[in-house]
Amino acid sequence: DKPVLPDWLNDVVGIDIAEGLSNCGSAEAFLDALTVFAESIVPNSKEIAHYYETENWKDFTTKVHALKSTARIIGAKELSERAKYLEYAGNHNYVDEIKYCSDDLLQLYLAYAFKLAPLIEPQTGDNDRPLIDGAALKEAYETMRDIAMSFDYDSMLMVMDSLEQYRLPPAETARYQSLLTAIKKPDWAMVSELLEEICN
Image (cartoon, rainbow, N blue to C red):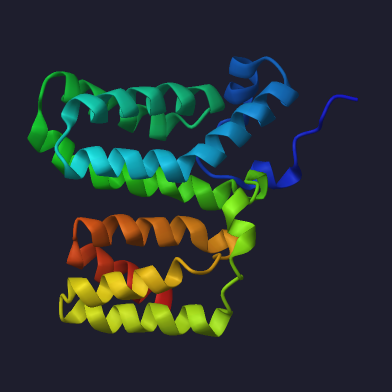
């Protein structure tokens, strides 16, 4: 009666299943660890981004240390190594290295929200919000692309606020969070790049 790992998991790039099974001891424990990991991606990435933006390097280092450990347990080797390097940079106050490497870490981390979407249960509050229509979401992204060209931060926030009234399809979660992280900095080059990719 032991749970069998879902077939789609074999196609997830970036997770060493054999290592995850070895670290967790069983398929059931591995799936539990993966689920906890998947459900924590969005809130954890927001915290890491917040500590980065406020230059709270102590708490930033604590969060990437935790990410290093949880990523290692599930077999996400590259993510664990990147978090390990940022932990080292944080412990030695290498701020330039933190600023240079943090975007790549967050992009890689948030990508797992999409990869592991089948494991993520809808949040309690999400069920109260209507699922956004595909055409409306496309229109919002195109509007944001136009706004990014003029670097209009306030207008961008207005569009983001309007999207918060809806639930996004699971496949859009990682992409949206990546976009949100770039907008909050704001990193207009990254915002434009992401929106071009989304809209084309």
